[in-house]
Length: 263
Image (cartoon, rainbow, N blue to C red; front, top):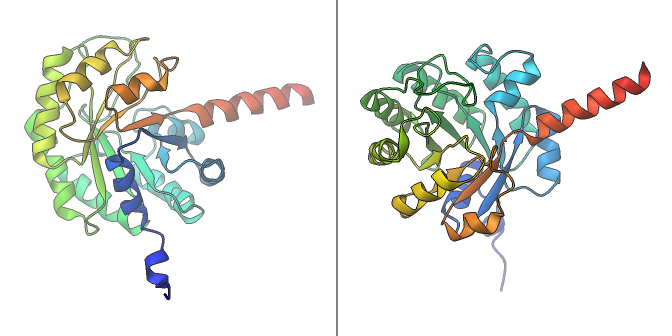
């Protein structure tokens, strides 16, 4: 029987990301912040790349508070996308403005074959999630749902993914507010939700996952509870784990080590 070469064609990057989100297995993606780090992530065998806002800001030498413009971020993403074949999920902060900015962002990401964007429900300009302080102001739910709807309405690729990142735990608002926002974002069309926590143990995350009960793909970023065995996340029904800053931290440490040898 002849093999149809079309059947062997690698799925597009957006399709690959959607398949990862819908996979029955726990999937992992790794942070990258420029072309060379993206290529290293792919060569290591990861199925996807997290274009971290913190890491990309750091490689530009600015703070993680929207000091790098969205166009500068998109320019770097183009280099990352051109040199890799696996999907890139952008850490899109708050969407870089209002719903009109979100529309334009999605358009420009699709032009560069970026597979999806994750936006968080904080106010613009965003604050890094781990800055001290409780009750950080969050975005109005209806306004944030408007951004999600605008992004979904403007996408051309049906598999392009918009992930809604919920900052209720980070901001000190608790489980009920996290669930209320997650359900609203899900109804607005988000392709998945990312629940974030700054505790050193995954208690909040596991409690949320139990209540969320698989209504849509659930993504986590275990930056502070990194020592938790991944089997815990599998049992909780987590869809995807993002290793969010390992590459930038490793590169800084390596540069500091080598430069000391040259002094």
